[in-house]
Every structure is written in C-alpha cells, then in structure tokens.
Length: 441
Ligand code: MEV
Image (spheres, rainbow, N blue to C red):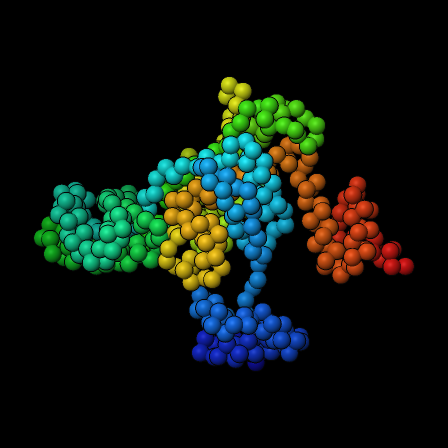
C-alpha cells in the first residue's frame, strides 16, 4: 500500500470530533500534536456555543475566525446605521466607512426595493403536444395550489406564498424538456427551504396529475428535478447617491470636483463596456455586499451567482453600477438583485448573525436589501474615487505595511520607524524584511 492510499478512510463521519481531528493531524501534518493543539485553541470556550457552530456543518474540526468589523455613519433613507461587516481583506471596511461618512454630509444613500419575487422550477420530461398542458393549465394550477396549501398556510398568513405559475416548453433545445416555473413571495425569509419544500410537493402532485389526466397519459412523464432558482432578477433593489458637482470636493489629488465627476463617470462607463474591467469593478461592489451578507448570516454564494448573472443579462457582462452627470448633479447608482432573509436559517442560529441584525435594528428583509445595496454602492464609490485620483495603492499601503509588520513580528519601535521610512516608498514584503534586518544590525 502506498502512503497516499493510507490517507483514505471510510466511516470518517462516524468518528467523534476528536477522532476526526486526530486522524487529520496524524495523516496530513508534520507536527500532529502541535497542530492538534492549535486547532483546538480555536474551539469556543463555551461548549454550548461550540455545539451550535458544529451543528451548522459537517466534519467540523475547529472554527475559522474572520474579522467582524463595523462601518459606522451610514445614512440610508434618512436613517442612521452602523453596518456589521465580515471580511478578511484589509481596506474594505475602512473604505466603506470613509464613503459612508462622505455621503453623510451629502444627503446619504437613497435605496428603493423595486420587487421581491423569487422563482422555483420543476424540470420535467414529457413527450407530446405541449398544447395539451396549456389547455389543462388552469385546472393544474388549482390542483397544485390545493395540494400545497398546508405547506404554504403560514407563509400566506404572513402575506407571502405562491404568486403565480408558468408552463414553459424547452423541447426544441432538449428532447421533451418542459418546465413548471413557480413564482413566490417569501416575506422576511430568504425562502430557499420554503420554496424547495413546496416544489418537491408540487412535483409529486404534477406527476399525479399527469397520470390522472387521460390527455396527458399518452406521453411518458418524468420529473428530473425540483429546485429554487438562485437567479432572482425580480428581487431587485436600487441604491443611489447624488449631490451637486461642487459638493463633491475637496479632491485628494487636487483635481477640481468637475474633473473628478467626469473621470468618475468615465471610469464607470468603461466598466459597462469592457468585461475585464467590469469583473473587477463588480468585485469591488461585492467586497461590501458579501461582507454584510455574511455578517447577517445570509447566503453570499447565492447573492454572488445571481449578481453576476444579472450583470450579464443582456448577453454582455457589465458594471452593476451607473453614473451620470445631469444638470450639474452627480448621480451614482447601483441596481442589484438581492435575495436576503432576516428570519430563519443562519440568521437565527448563528450568534453573531443575530447580533448583526440587532446592530441594524432588526431590519425586515426589504430594509436589509436597501442597506446591503447602499454598502455595495459605498464600496464601489470608494474604490472608483481612489482609482481615478490617488490610485488604489495609496490607501492600501498603510494597511499592507501593518500586515507585513505583524507577520514579521516587528516591535512597536520598529513599526514606528517603518511607517516613517515607507511614507514615500513602495511597500513590499521583501523591502520591509530588509528594512527590519537593517534596523536590528
Ligand atoms: C479590490 O478588492 C477591489 C478593487 O479592485 C475594485 C475596483 O477596481 O473597482 C479596488
């Protein structure tokens, strides 16, 4: 048996947490005891809290800490917020905070939820004339609503539930492929579990209907899958900032406010044209969005996947934000689909997600959409403003230097000397190491 084959195991999930940890450190690390000790050191000291964290996933060995920060001074729709952010990239929280403070004295952020509709799909195969389904559709709809009524009762009581259904025919692209597309309102929950549960019940009812109806029995019916769509272009929010051009100043590099406004809008238009620039531009938006989505216990993968698909909705990947100068007014806006929840799921289970929601004043899902969109816009504003004035490295340098000094174990005196020395020089890991070595000679 080769060494590599020894590293496979069956029944791993049945081992105790300590058993798993031991197996991993003994097989994949050079200093098992030290690593075991290190990974254990991240276990929560309160056993109950640790149990909660372990219950969120499987095969957990330890916790993986990320900074939990805050960007204060956000004025959104006339209300003040301190926004919790979980992110590992330096400068993001500082940039969001700076942009929030900047817009605080210029009217703040204006966010509006445009729609809150989500979609689920039952993908099925059926050979035959699609018109037969179309003809029976009103009856089918009532049948499916009736069969799922017990599951949707409490959501309906909250003002949500199934909004509509559509039958789609994709059989020209894939043999016999038909689809039932179902629209949902999930109120303050993100709704993934609700939608999937209803869809699975509907899929069974759909099968029963296909077997029961003589006109449909002629073709073989098969449900392939039933699942929500994470593409939610009708769960949309818009956030905007605006001010007169003069109010944009003073500008850090000495440019006039007019030059800043024009360069800024040009930079945004460039990100609408070139996908290579658009991806980086939108990544800057998601720096802010993901951080709040994560802090509030929401699904950042769903938000990312959807946001990027939306950015390419006309077949060309573009910036999610837009900028115009109208009648001497600078207007910068972001329109983005955000499927978020403030009840259920991780929002309830994760102790810090709960605290994040408390920090935001227990927002509804639509209010959270407005907050998150504003943070995305703030983040984008800060990045593009830096890019068209001082360059991005100017702001990053101090943080970058702090991180390198931390990694190299510099003393307080060495840190002070390094900040003075690198104030007008390019910071790199090698340059800082050489500087510290020279210092200690
Ligand atoms: C870095 O994380 C994000 C930026 O690259 C975004 C941008 O280029 O717009 C600064």
